[in-house]
Length: 186
View 1: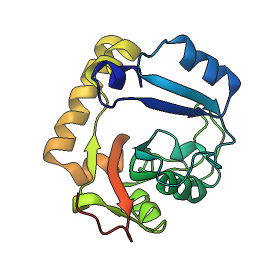
View 2: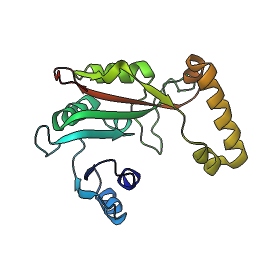
View 3: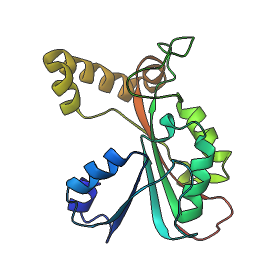
């Protein structure tokens, strides 16, 4: 949100967070265009219908027990909904679920996130779904030279063998959606 504010992506920003420490952390960042940061239960959003142009759910859906409920709420309060999730439903995903430190309870492939969105009466605008690799800086920060090699291998596979890449490694999927019943032009 801080970076979007620096880029003047919007005139103002509103944030929702499920933890009070998260609210405090966001407020302490002193984001210039942030108008409000509120605590919420993860599902019920107190804003009125069509309050916003865009709702951003970046790396949220994989954490919530009832993702459809949150998607319906996002669709209710905003004309457009941006969803980004890690694509963790790969060949390396264990057969049985185990809680981990990142708190993901839902695991997606490009097909399953798209279907989730569609089952919430949302349509993917332009039928576009973007699959990306996190930046090289993240890999280098985490594992230095080994991380840099990992980044280049994943980039190569994604560019030249995308179907193999998403079966082997975790990437990110991004989609911009709108209510299927809203017939306004984009």
